[in-house]
Picture (cartoon, rainbow, N blue to C red):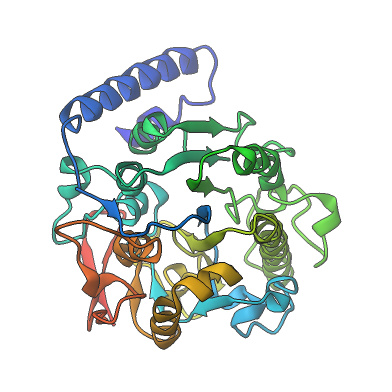
Length: 378
Protein backbone atom coordinates (compact mmCIF):
# COMPACT_ATOMS: atom_id res chain seq x y z
CA UNK A 1 0.00 0.00 0.00
CA UNK A 2 2.80 2.40 0.88
CA UNK A 3 4.52 1.74 -2.43
CA UNK A 4 1.25 2.35 -4.29
CA UNK A 5 0.74 5.75 -2.68
CA UNK A 6 4.34 6.84 -3.16
CA UNK A 7 3.91 6.51 -6.93
CA UNK A 8 1.33 9.31 -6.80
CA UNK A 9 3.08 11.73 -4.44
CA UNK A 10 4.58 13.62 -7.37
CA UNK A 11 1.83 13.14 -9.95
CA UNK A 12 -0.55 16.06 -10.49
CA UNK A 13 -3.49 16.22 -9.84
CA UNK A 14 -3.60 12.96 -7.85
CA UNK A 15 -1.08 14.26 -5.33
CA UNK A 16 -3.46 17.05 -4.26
CA UNK A 17 -5.95 14.51 -2.96
CA UNK A 18 -3.17 12.40 -1.46
CA UNK A 19 -1.61 15.25 0.52
CA UNK A 20 -4.99 16.60 1.65
CA UNK A 21 -5.73 13.15 3.03
CA UNK A 22 -2.28 12.97 4.72
CA UNK A 23 -2.77 16.38 6.36
CA UNK A 24 -6.21 15.36 7.61
CA UNK A 25 -4.97 12.00 8.90
CA UNK A 26 -1.91 13.52 10.62
CA UNK A 27 -4.06 16.17 12.28
CA UNK A 28 -6.40 13.49 13.55
CA UNK A 29 -3.47 11.49 14.96
CA UNK A 30 -2.09 14.58 16.71
CA UNK A 31 -5.46 15.36 18.31
CA UNK A 32 -5.76 11.76 19.50
CA UNK A 33 -2.27 11.86 21.03
CA UNK A 34 -2.90 15.17 22.77
CA UNK A 35 -6.20 13.90 24.18
CA UNK A 36 -4.76 10.62 25.45
CA UNK A 37 -1.68 12.27 26.99
CA UNK A 38 -3.42 15.34 28.38
CA UNK A 39 -3.26 14.25 32.03
CA UNK A 40 0.12 12.52 31.87
CA UNK A 41 2.88 13.80 34.18
CA UNK A 42 6.41 12.55 34.76
CA UNK A 43 6.62 14.42 38.05
CA UNK A 44 9.84 16.01 36.78
CA UNK A 45 11.45 18.67 38.98
CA UNK A 46 14.68 20.62 38.86
CA UNK A 47 16.91 20.08 41.87
CA UNK A 48 18.59 23.46 41.43
CA UNK A 49 17.98 26.80 43.07
CA UNK A 50 20.63 28.56 41.01
CA UNK A 51 20.44 32.24 40.07
CA UNK A 52 22.36 31.77 36.80
CA UNK A 53 20.41 31.19 33.58
CA UNK A 54 20.41 27.64 32.24
CA UNK A 55 20.27 26.70 28.55
CA UNK A 56 20.19 23.17 27.20
CA UNK A 57 20.28 22.48 23.47
CA UNK A 58 19.59 19.16 21.78
CA UNK A 59 20.69 19.00 18.14
CA UNK A 60 19.24 16.02 16.27
CA UNK A 61 21.48 15.12 13.36
CA UNK A 62 20.53 13.24 10.22
CA UNK A 63 22.36 10.34 8.56
CA UNK A 64 25.71 11.25 10.15
CA UNK A 65 28.37 8.54 10.43
CA UNK A 66 30.68 8.37 13.42
CA UNK A 67 33.66 7.35 11.32
CA UNK A 68 33.42 10.31 8.92
CA UNK A 69 34.00 12.87 11.69
CA UNK A 70 37.61 14.06 11.80
CA UNK A 71 37.30 14.44 15.56
CA UNK A 72 36.75 10.67 15.70
CA UNK A 73 39.86 9.79 13.71
CA UNK A 74 38.67 10.07 10.09
CA UNK A 75 41.60 10.66 7.74
CA UNK A 76 39.96 13.77 6.28
CA UNK A 77 39.75 16.93 8.44
CA UNK A 78 35.95 17.15 8.27
CA UNK A 79 35.56 18.72 11.76
CA UNK A 80 38.31 21.36 12.02
CA UNK A 81 36.23 23.76 14.14
CA UNK A 82 34.97 21.18 16.62
CA UNK A 83 38.49 19.86 17.10
CA UNK A 84 39.49 23.31 18.38
CA UNK A 85 36.51 23.57 20.75
CA UNK A 86 37.11 23.30 24.49
CA UNK A 87 34.88 21.19 26.76
CA UNK A 88 33.71 19.04 23.84
CA UNK A 89 33.40 15.29 24.38
CA UNK A 90 32.86 12.61 21.74
CA UNK A 91 31.41 9.20 22.59
CA UNK A 92 32.90 6.38 20.58
CA UNK A 93 30.53 3.41 20.78
CA UNK A 94 26.96 4.59 20.18
CA UNK A 95 24.49 2.71 17.97
CA UNK A 96 21.17 3.89 16.59
CA UNK A 97 18.23 1.72 17.65
CA UNK A 98 16.83 1.86 14.09
CA UNK A 99 17.92 3.05 10.65
CA UNK A 100 14.87 5.13 9.69
CA UNK A 101 14.20 8.57 11.18
CA UNK A 102 10.53 7.96 11.92
CA UNK A 103 11.43 4.77 13.80
CA UNK A 104 14.31 6.28 15.80
CA UNK A 105 12.82 9.55 17.06
CA UNK A 106 10.22 8.05 19.44
CA UNK A 107 12.93 5.91 21.07
CA UNK A 108 15.25 8.90 21.27
CA UNK A 109 12.76 11.35 22.77
CA UNK A 110 10.65 9.14 25.06
CA UNK A 111 11.29 6.38 27.57
CA UNK A 112 10.22 3.76 25.02
CA UNK A 113 12.57 0.89 24.29
CA UNK A 114 12.35 -1.91 21.77
CA UNK A 115 11.22 -4.15 24.64
CA UNK A 116 8.58 -1.61 25.72
CA UNK A 117 7.65 0.27 22.52
CA UNK A 118 4.14 1.22 23.69
CA UNK A 119 5.60 3.84 26.06
CA UNK A 120 5.97 6.18 23.07
CA UNK A 121 2.15 6.30 22.93
CA UNK A 122 1.46 6.12 26.67
CA UNK A 123 3.88 8.80 27.91
CA UNK A 124 4.95 12.27 26.89
CA UNK A 125 8.41 13.16 25.62
CA UNK A 126 11.65 14.82 26.70
CA UNK A 127 10.55 18.46 26.09
CA UNK A 128 7.40 17.83 28.15
CA UNK A 129 9.52 16.75 31.11
CA UNK A 130 11.52 19.99 30.82
CA UNK A 131 8.27 21.94 30.80
CA UNK A 132 7.17 20.23 34.00
CA UNK A 133 10.45 21.34 35.58
CA UNK A 134 9.72 24.99 34.71
CA UNK A 135 11.65 25.32 31.46
CA UNK A 136 10.72 27.42 28.44
CA UNK A 137 10.82 24.94 25.53
CA UNK A 138 11.30 25.44 21.80
CA UNK A 139 11.42 23.18 18.76
CA UNK A 140 12.99 24.52 15.57
CA UNK A 141 13.47 22.25 12.60
CA UNK A 142 14.58 21.95 9.02
CA UNK A 143 12.60 18.73 8.63
CA UNK A 144 10.15 16.46 10.44
CA UNK A 145 6.90 18.38 10.04
CA UNK A 146 5.28 15.33 8.40
CA UNK A 147 5.67 13.11 11.49
CA UNK A 148 2.60 13.29 13.78
CA UNK A 149 4.78 12.26 16.74
CA UNK A 150 7.05 15.29 16.17
CA UNK A 151 4.16 17.63 15.44
CA UNK A 152 2.55 16.72 18.76
CA UNK A 153 5.74 17.56 20.67
CA UNK A 154 6.31 20.76 18.70
CA UNK A 155 2.73 21.99 19.17
CA UNK A 156 3.02 21.55 22.93
CA UNK A 157 6.31 23.48 23.09
CA UNK A 158 6.24 27.18 23.96
CA UNK A 159 7.67 28.00 20.51
CA UNK A 160 7.90 25.85 17.40
CA UNK A 161 9.08 26.67 13.90
CA UNK A 162 9.57 24.48 10.85
CA UNK A 163 11.40 25.83 7.84
CA UNK A 164 9.10 25.57 4.87
CA UNK A 165 11.58 25.01 2.04
CA UNK A 166 11.10 21.90 -0.09
CA UNK A 167 13.04 18.81 0.95
CA UNK A 168 15.59 19.03 -1.86
CA UNK A 169 15.51 22.77 -2.46
CA UNK A 170 18.94 24.34 -2.90
CA UNK A 171 18.17 26.74 -0.04
CA UNK A 172 17.06 24.03 2.39
CA UNK A 173 20.16 24.38 4.54
CA UNK A 174 20.58 24.24 8.27
CA UNK A 175 22.15 27.69 8.67
CA UNK A 176 18.68 29.19 8.24
CA UNK A 177 17.90 27.82 11.68
CA UNK A 178 20.53 30.08 13.28
CA UNK A 179 18.45 33.32 13.20
CA UNK A 180 15.63 31.40 14.90
CA UNK A 181 18.12 30.27 17.54
CA UNK A 182 19.23 33.88 18.06
CA UNK A 183 15.64 34.91 18.76
CA UNK A 184 15.22 32.11 21.29
CA UNK A 185 18.47 32.93 23.07
CA UNK A 186 17.31 36.54 23.38
CA UNK A 187 14.09 35.41 25.09
CA UNK A 188 13.96 36.48 28.75
CA UNK A 189 13.22 33.00 30.16
CA UNK A 190 15.83 31.98 32.74
CA UNK A 191 15.67 28.27 31.90
CA UNK A 192 15.46 27.09 28.30
CA UNK A 193 15.39 23.86 26.37
CA UNK A 194 15.92 24.27 22.62
CA UNK A 195 15.61 21.30 20.27
CA UNK A 196 17.12 21.79 16.81
CA UNK A 197 16.21 19.15 14.22
CA UNK A 198 18.61 19.45 11.29
CA UNK A 199 18.68 18.17 7.72
CA UNK A 200 22.30 17.19 8.27
CA UNK A 201 23.60 14.61 5.82
CA UNK A 202 20.38 13.33 4.31
CA UNK A 203 20.65 12.29 0.67
CA UNK A 204 20.83 14.12 -1.74
CA UNK A 205 24.06 15.22 -0.05
CA UNK A 206 25.08 18.04 -2.38
CA UNK A 207 21.79 19.82 -1.62
CA UNK A 208 22.68 20.06 2.09
CA UNK A 209 25.49 22.61 2.01
CA UNK A 210 26.18 25.97 0.29
CA UNK A 211 28.88 26.40 -2.33
CA UNK A 212 31.38 27.64 0.26
CA UNK A 213 31.52 24.10 1.71
CA UNK A 214 32.14 22.35 -1.60
CA UNK A 215 35.58 21.39 -0.38
CA UNK A 216 35.92 17.79 -1.55
CA UNK A 217 35.68 17.38 -5.33
CA UNK A 218 34.47 16.04 -7.66
CA UNK A 219 31.08 15.81 -5.98
CA UNK A 220 27.65 14.73 -7.15
CA UNK A 221 26.88 18.18 -8.61
CA UNK A 222 23.08 17.75 -8.41
CA UNK A 223 23.13 14.31 -10.03
CA UNK A 224 20.56 12.11 -8.32
CA UNK A 225 21.62 8.89 -10.00
CA UNK A 226 23.74 6.59 -7.83
CA UNK A 227 26.78 5.11 -9.55
CA UNK A 228 28.60 2.12 -8.09
CA UNK A 229 31.71 2.70 -10.18
CA UNK A 230 34.90 3.84 -8.48
CA UNK A 231 34.41 7.38 -9.80
CA UNK A 232 30.76 7.39 -8.72
CA UNK A 233 31.72 6.21 -5.24
CA UNK A 234 34.28 9.00 -4.94
CA UNK A 235 31.70 11.63 -5.92
CA UNK A 236 29.28 10.16 -3.38
CA UNK A 237 31.82 10.17 -0.54
CA UNK A 238 33.09 13.65 -1.43
CA UNK A 239 29.57 15.08 -1.31
CA UNK A 240 28.85 13.25 1.93
CA UNK A 241 32.03 14.52 3.57
CA UNK A 242 31.10 18.06 2.58
CA UNK A 243 27.90 17.63 4.61
CA UNK A 244 29.97 16.69 7.65
CA UNK A 245 32.18 19.73 7.10
CA UNK A 246 29.01 21.83 7.05
CA UNK A 247 27.69 20.13 10.20
CA UNK A 248 30.98 21.06 11.87
CA UNK A 249 30.26 24.70 10.98
CA UNK A 250 26.63 24.58 12.18
CA UNK A 251 27.53 23.02 15.54
CA UNK A 252 30.39 25.47 16.03
CA UNK A 253 28.05 28.39 15.34
CA UNK A 254 25.59 27.11 17.94
CA UNK A 255 28.35 26.60 20.50
CA UNK A 256 29.72 30.12 19.90
CA UNK A 257 26.26 31.55 20.58
CA UNK A 258 25.95 29.54 23.79
CA UNK A 259 29.38 30.68 24.95
CA UNK A 260 28.24 34.30 24.63
CA UNK A 261 25.29 33.70 26.97
CA UNK A 262 27.42 33.30 30.09
CA UNK A 263 24.98 30.64 31.26
CA UNK A 264 25.08 27.14 32.67
CA UNK A 265 24.63 25.49 29.32
CA UNK A 266 25.12 22.24 27.48
CA UNK A 267 24.72 21.04 23.92
CA UNK A 268 24.11 17.42 22.94
CA UNK A 269 24.42 16.41 19.30
CA UNK A 270 23.12 12.97 18.34
CA UNK A 271 22.41 11.68 14.86
CA UNK A 272 19.22 9.72 14.29
CA UNK A 273 21.05 6.98 12.36
CA UNK A 274 24.10 6.71 10.14
CA UNK A 275 24.57 5.96 6.45
CA UNK A 276 25.96 3.26 4.17
CA UNK A 277 28.28 4.41 1.37
CA UNK A 278 28.80 1.23 -0.66
CA UNK A 279 30.97 -0.11 2.15
CA UNK A 280 32.47 -3.56 1.73
CA UNK A 281 31.49 -6.33 1.92
CA UNK A 282 27.73 -5.71 1.58
CA UNK A 283 28.01 -2.68 -0.75
CA UNK A 284 24.85 -1.18 0.72
CA UNK A 285 24.05 2.49 0.21
CA UNK A 286 22.05 5.20 2.03
CA UNK A 287 19.93 3.97 4.97
CA UNK A 288 16.82 1.91 5.61
CA UNK A 289 18.38 -1.38 4.57
CA UNK A 290 16.57 -4.38 6.07
CA UNK A 291 19.91 -5.96 7.00
CA UNK A 292 21.82 -2.85 8.10
CA UNK A 293 25.58 -2.90 8.24
CA UNK A 294 27.22 -1.38 11.31
CA UNK A 295 28.20 1.69 9.24
CA UNK A 296 24.47 2.48 9.01
CA UNK A 297 24.07 2.37 12.80
CA UNK A 298 27.30 3.71 14.32
CA UNK A 299 26.43 7.33 15.08
CA UNK A 300 28.22 10.37 16.54
CA UNK A 301 27.28 11.60 20.00
CA UNK A 302 28.92 14.89 21.00
CA UNK A 303 28.47 16.79 24.26
CA UNK A 304 29.67 20.36 24.78
CA UNK A 305 29.61 21.96 28.24
CA UNK A 306 30.08 25.60 29.18
CA UNK A 307 32.66 26.74 31.73
CA UNK A 308 29.83 27.51 34.13
CA UNK A 309 28.36 24.03 33.67
CA UNK A 310 31.67 22.30 34.42
CA UNK A 311 32.16 24.44 37.52
CA UNK A 312 28.61 23.80 38.76
CA UNK A 313 28.44 20.05 38.09
CA UNK A 314 32.00 18.65 38.33
CA UNK A 315 30.67 15.22 39.41
CA UNK A 316 28.54 14.89 36.27
CA UNK A 317 31.46 15.93 34.09
CA UNK A 318 33.70 13.34 35.75
CA UNK A 319 31.11 10.62 35.15
CA UNK A 320 30.67 11.65 31.52
CA UNK A 321 34.40 11.40 30.88
CA UNK A 322 34.42 7.86 32.23
CA UNK A 323 31.71 6.69 29.83
CA UNK A 324 33.16 7.89 26.50
CA UNK A 325 34.09 4.36 25.38
CA UNK A 326 31.06 2.56 26.85
CA UNK A 327 28.32 0.91 24.78
CA UNK A 328 25.40 3.31 24.33
CA UNK A 329 22.27 3.55 22.22
CA UNK A 330 19.85 6.31 21.25
CA UNK A 331 17.59 4.99 24.04
CA UNK A 332 20.11 6.37 26.57
CA UNK A 333 19.31 9.94 25.58
CA UNK A 334 16.11 10.50 27.59
CA UNK A 335 17.46 9.87 31.09
CA UNK A 336 20.95 11.15 30.25
CA UNK A 337 19.70 14.51 29.00
CA UNK A 338 17.41 15.07 31.99
CA UNK A 339 20.19 14.08 34.38
CA UNK A 340 22.57 16.42 32.53
CA UNK A 341 20.13 19.26 33.33
CA UNK A 342 19.77 18.02 36.94
CA UNK A 343 16.08 17.30 36.36
CA UNK A 344 14.77 14.21 38.08
CA UNK A 345 11.50 12.29 38.34
CA UNK A 346 10.23 9.41 40.52
CA UNK A 347 10.60 6.57 37.98
CA UNK A 348 13.89 7.70 36.47
CA UNK A 349 16.35 5.09 35.25
CA UNK A 350 19.74 6.51 36.23
CA UNK A 351 21.37 3.31 35.08
CA UNK A 352 20.66 4.68 31.58
CA UNK A 353 22.29 8.06 32.26
CA UNK A 354 25.88 8.55 31.11
CA UNK A 355 26.39 11.35 33.68
CA UNK A 356 25.27 9.23 36.65
CA UNK A 357 27.49 7.09 38.90
CA UNK A 358 24.74 4.44 38.57
CA UNK A 359 25.24 4.11 34.81
CA UNK A 360 25.77 0.64 33.40
CA UNK A 361 26.32 -0.24 29.78
CA UNK A 362 24.19 -2.86 28.09
CA UNK A 363 25.84 -6.10 27.03
CA UNK A 364 23.50 -6.26 24.01
CA UNK A 365 21.92 -3.48 21.95
CA UNK A 366 18.71 -3.90 20.03
CA UNK A 367 17.96 -2.52 16.57
CA UNK A 368 14.58 -2.25 14.85
CA UNK A 369 14.79 -2.90 11.10
CA UNK A 370 12.48 -1.39 8.45
CA UNK A 371 10.71 -4.76 8.10
CA UNK A 372 9.84 -4.68 11.82
CA UNK A 373 12.39 -7.24 12.99
CA UNK A 374 14.49 -6.74 16.12
CA UNK A 375 18.14 -7.70 15.74
CA UNK A 376 20.89 -7.64 18.39
CA UNK A 377 24.36 -6.16 18.26
CA UNK A 378 27.11 -5.89 20.84
